[in-house]
Length: 344
Image (cartoon, rainbow, N blue to C red; front, side, top):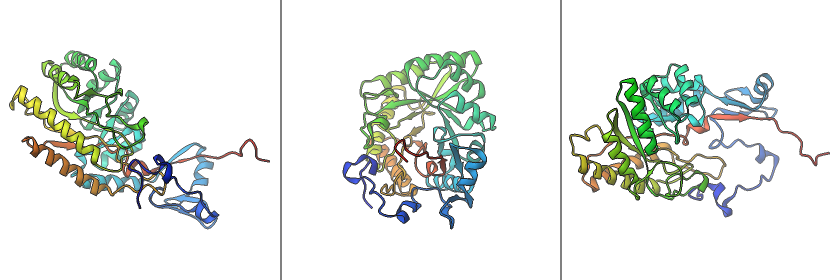
């Protein structure tokens, strides 16, 4: 099956065809729906053997429905593909509640939170704070303070002012906070403009091309209570190929080499991680056809190795934050529909 590089929904000539029959309309495509989803004899969709109509009647709608076995099996597949759960950060923005946080922890994955609310949910679920990374642009002082107080493993810095704020907060707490700097690599990912996050004219991160990223690195090294351990890049969401990641890795590794050249190997010894972000696509409609997560992970690993070798840098460790592939397909939203205004 072939699709537009950003998925079928983004190509005018590749929209999903209108169902031609009731049978086709009722078909549950296994690439789109959660695993263990079938229709019973009366045509009602069931997840893990439970009719969605029963869940809607008992709990009301709208309702998120997640099959624990499905979610856990996807966690295990992603962890295996990326060389262990410690390399994989579940993006809480995909969906987070206390129980989901517990499943993620028990499967050995780490957790990526982007708001104070998500951090509070994770801590309420007793998620190990050292396996939490605080993301997000325009973090408030309250959010940064809560993260430092909780002892989160990493904070991803998104602006110059965050460097000053976090350094002051860490100083007041008497700790050294590990951080990554989010860099913008100028990659136009083949996805919808509303979910593309690494082109120059957007709100996330610090530009490599303009020199802002290197300026941020210098400021972190000058801070007394921050320790730079990595660089983060995120080029977008719903991405179906790795071409954009190859360009991003080339530019991030180039910046890493520049940093090591300026500050020396000894001072940058702890700068050992590159986070290429997530955003790998999933099937929202039957025509979407993303490659298996194991194939994508292997390609990303090869890209990182090749780009490191090309500039003579040791291959850094790497993280991935899967806000898309596999895990996003585990939850389902159950709603009731109403007649249209013109129905009689």
